[in-house]
Length: 284
Image (cartoon, rainbow, N blue to C red; front, top):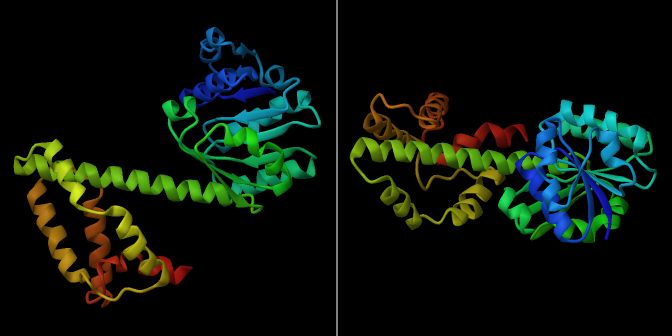
């Protein structure tokens, strides 16, 4: 078993720390709000007053923080007490370009660093479920692969490009947020139509969203916009949705309508509705 530290004990970091203690690790933790680290003491976690105190003697240091600025500040605070064999495992969702800069800077300082964002909430973290992506030097990944695998159901090594896990985390979160926005608009349509919201959600089970990604999504990525659902017809349907919602607030549909109007004005109305991604593929 290992001596490890968690810097950042919000909901996710706290769950990771609890799970690590259950696996038999010796765990120290620090949080900017001391009460959050102290709340872990009953689980067997040692609460530290500073990042430097938390990382002293740790072979792995897990960062579960807010953003890039906080990550850089906390690493700087911890550096004086990092041992030469310590690996920084950063689970923070960060800007890809800054992640790459950070990885380069730390490598030049002789500090081992892997970026390991996750798709999991606190309950999943406590039960080693969900997914974790890893980007960084393969030799570092192989050193900690068994320990990271113990934290998650699915561990994906993305390669040595240090910002690639950060990019893919944004892909995934964009999908999660986008689905949530569309669900909000569907529930608004249900409200406007006098349909029970739970029944509206249940009816969505008729759609195979995975097949849509595998079919329509792959065609979009290839730049194939041959019409099976013309953009002009899809725009008509969006008009019906907007009219049904009336003056109720909507999260996504107005922006979709605006983008469709732009593309139709550019002469793309006969393409598939997936031509919403036309410029994205061109840019690539």
